[in-house]
Length: 624
Image 1 (cartoon, rainbow, N blue to C red):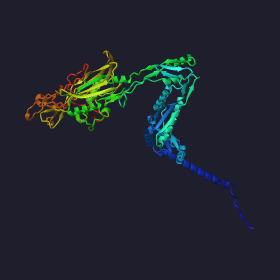
Image 2: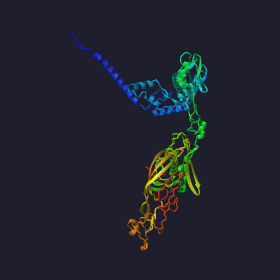
Image 3: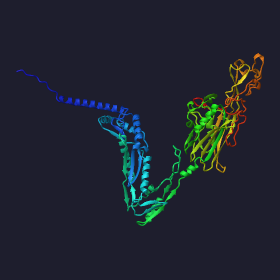
Image 4: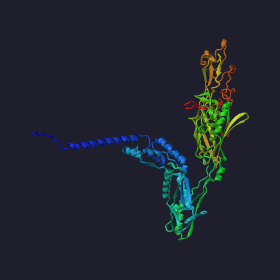
């Protein structure tokens, strides 16, 4: 009988395969989930089925979601109405009065992006129908909601139904033991916030019409418990509010009379009264600083400061001065507001009507758009110097202007140099400008009106020092006839000066109460420039300072003086006016500003700024 050999099976060998398969599957699933997590956190869009205050922001980027939520809030906020109700009393507001809180979408974006190991689950869940809602963010001390609560609290306090106290004239009258209404205002605010969130969900989530949410106040009436005297004080107290000028319409708003009482006195009177006895405590009635009528009578009644300058130069320059002054005319600054010359006039460009006129660029006189507008800023500054208004920013010109005292000018260059001052008074300030002609000459007048109950006034004074007389320089020019010198009539010479300005503040009786340092100013010297023919050689090398003459004749010229001799045929011209002028001798002396106080006139000044505004800008190298 043939036998068959059987192989011996290895014990336990058949049981390992299922575990290996299970481990492989688990590893694959884990890797797949980690990959899903990585994909989820790398997405730059919000998960599906996510909304913010009812607005669907699914699969939107942060910027797209922010725009969608803000737009929905602005467009539909007025359709969401919240009403507080108590026994026939109602106070309402709409959601458009609420403060929109940017960044709400960041909370929505965080879903599926912050926790790596949860992100895959959140992504998959939202793709399969799971949804998330992010509520509309409301500040803890939301002004509109606080105003609604205060209005309702006053309305409840003013109701006489089942009320243990009431305001009668200048007294708070109370009956001991009478029912006192007590409202849990913290609960009311909580309910109001929840109602608003429901309103957002319904209105911004695609609802068709307006949504009104009503919150009914639950009040308790107690005849036995001691009243909440602090709650009564909150309900009765009214902060006095002065009339103000509306920043948008510039109309005067109404005022509010303040009401208050002594809480301790009310508690004492209550304790001393018999059950059922009616007693009272006096109310403190506080009139505001300004009622509507009184403020209207005070507005712009006083001339705070004034300045007048003579406007010279070309017709284009005069036009630019007038145009820039008109931009500043009737500008009103409310208390605490700043005036910015650059922001008020805007960029001085041709499309705004400004014309070519002389300006300084890199120390040279050139024609450019807007030349002359620095005279307007300087005249306003000069008027401000005659007030106690705070100067925030001011820069001096590169050269002496001549139309205001040294140290009392203010140059500007759009985008870099500005003139700014602040209304540091308790009342609005108005700027009034007027460009006018008198006796054939043009003037610019600036007046600052406000309210000056104390009668304070200011007097600016400047001292000058470090005078630098114009030197003489020579420049070759082949077009100049041989044997002659020709004065450069465009690059007008200026005497250099330093100045320091102080503003002295006086009370109405003329007593000095303050001395304010307004800073120093440094004005450069610009030399007289003479052009010569290169064939004559450098004038510095001329024998005895005499230029060679054609045909062997000579004409004596002293190169050390600032003007050529009268027989040289050279007539210096003021480039601002086009009229003859002698450098070193004022042809158009500085116009004395209005109401000067001991003005300082520098001796032997070469003359006024011939219609130029001077100080190089940091980039362009010039100023207007």
